[in-house]
Length: 92
Image (cartoon, rainbow, N blue to C red; front, side, top):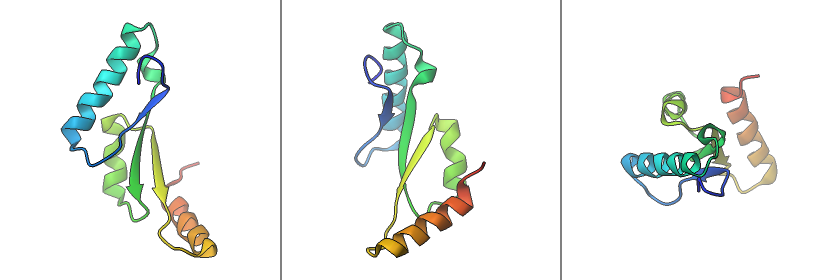
């Protein structure tokens, strides 16, 4: 991750401590390779029903990007879900 990649996107059902260890490893590896560890992006997945509290906890973990997936099967309903999500969380 830190040697060649541009970020970290934890997959699977990792517990928070495992994610923390992997993120720290990616940052340390980047630094050892002469790369800027602060340039790495840390991406997390969350449901469309993410709470304000969950979002607020991400920056303390180093998270810089959140990926969400609409749950509706109809494309227009998906757009509505994502628009409502954006209205709740996107700060311009």
